[in-house]
Length: 286
Image (cartoon, rainbow, N blue to C red; front, side, top):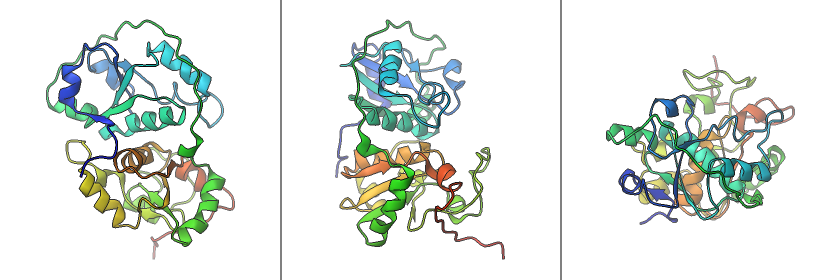
């Protein structure tokens, strides 16, 4: 069984195409300082907060600003964009989802991300490449890829009827309500622990191998179908702020080819704090 779409490249492929015209590498890390300590030659840096998020509102930059961003990075409309980063490509997957939502085409991930490249002792540099700015064409959002809070609330009836699925990709302790954030990570202001009613707990890391690469299509299919998350359902994935759920969205939509998969970017930091939103907990202090 093969992946549904040709959206991955290997570290070998990247190494062989470092100087190939039209191949553009973008590094997207949780730790934005990593790029400066050494990155793949020719790769440009994308900061997921300052580059993708609106400076005031809790929302993303508009499509015209996405065009400006890609133009500033020297990306052309016909270029093949290869995204990679740390945390087994958490934030590279987030950028992949956001750029797809913004209407950008020609996107792929480097399988294994920065972790695998470094583990293999491949070439790095601390020099940022010199790029020539472009006029990236206008973009149109694909709203079928994003779920808003009220859409998630309406989706609960489909979950109850077996026509929809919710995938909570956080850790089991976050899902149960024992904790409100990942270990060794900051508390991002969530007041309540638990999960959205009817959600299935399928932590994002179950989809990866130890080297950060994705598991085989057969293994991924068994993982999600074993939890009742099947291709015939309308699926919504979420985590805390959507970086981990972007990774699972990528697995479901791009690797397995599920036709209807949305990422709820508000995720638990919105749902857990929202007035009137139902939650479930499976953890008790007693």
